[in-house]
Amino acid sequence: MKLLRVGTAGAERPALLDAEGTLRDLSGVVDDIDGALLADDAALGRVRAAAEAGELPALDATGLRIGPPLGRIGKIVCIGLNYHDHARETGAEPPAEPVVFFKAADTVVGPNDTVLVPRGSVKTDWEVELAVVIGRTARYVADDEDPLAYVAGYAVAHDVSEREFQIERGGTWDKGKNCETFNPLGPWLVTADEVGDPQELSLKLWVNGELKQDGTTAEQIFPVAEVVRYVSQFMVLYPGDVINTGTPAGVALGAPEPKPFLRGGDVVELEIAGLGKQRQEFKDA
Image (cartoon, rainbow, N blue to C red; front, side):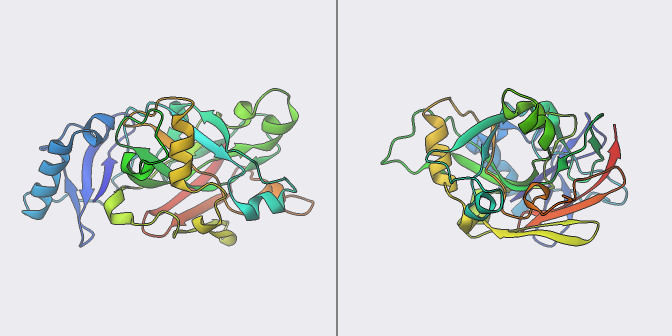
């Protein structure tokens, strides 16, 4: 299933995109697309049954904003330097263990919402990423378990980053990762059964129409299953938590000088095969 949330910011309602590309209203079946729904097999079954029976009313998509596909996100765990090609372009050694940092849930905006270049920023950068959405509580996932059994679905994430704040201003990466609007998410949450192997997905990103990133999740140093297992050893993952799994080569940080960092007025478009597309105009905060 392709689950999404539509409407004005803060007042989104649940919806479903059917196999014919028609937007369907889910508000008569569930209250929201969130961790509680993803953890409730019976509720998900009702959604599937209503969709298959053709019982869901169509929505007019004209002028309708698409919000983040997941409400009430618990935490966003991020994995840095998780692509071989990205490590090479930045001159970094591939990490021996996953590099973990966090983004606050309030950085999340819709896939086509405006992204703000922070005040004082000179190095705002782009990063297309596969987002993993947790559907079952994962605590100390064992080596003989399937970590993907804890995954409800996947989405496109844009891990917007301010590199000066991240790297040159002391402390951890968090200052360059948690600026307002720095995590567009969506358009859809695609359930895991529809995605198949998460290590066979292509990722692309364009800036002002120029292709900058063209990668594949096959390049991940730590694949999705290993990331879920690893993170669960250090923290409990709950339904509705999100893991951003890193970005392939092609970011501004890895480009020759002068590096083409983002400015107000730039337009970024990104997509992951089967998970949908995003488009953001950048404006000065």
